[in-house]
Image 1 (cartoon, one colour):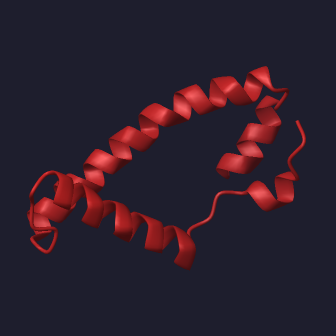
Image 2 (spheres, one colour; image 1 turned 90 degrees about the vertical axis):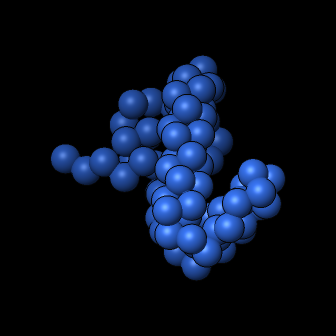
Length: 81
């Protein structure tokens, strides 16, 4: 492990909001949907959430392979005792 865990804690900020907003717009365009419709917005956000969840399992396994401990991952993800 080479990363500074203090800089890796999960957070929601302006940058992550911009990325999600852009991802919703891009996915809407790819699916030819109107992202301004609240039902469509919910569909798109849920699709992105499911995709991110699927990616988490692979990323966690890779992190373990690279030497991150369970406690390291708990810190990054934001779990606190």
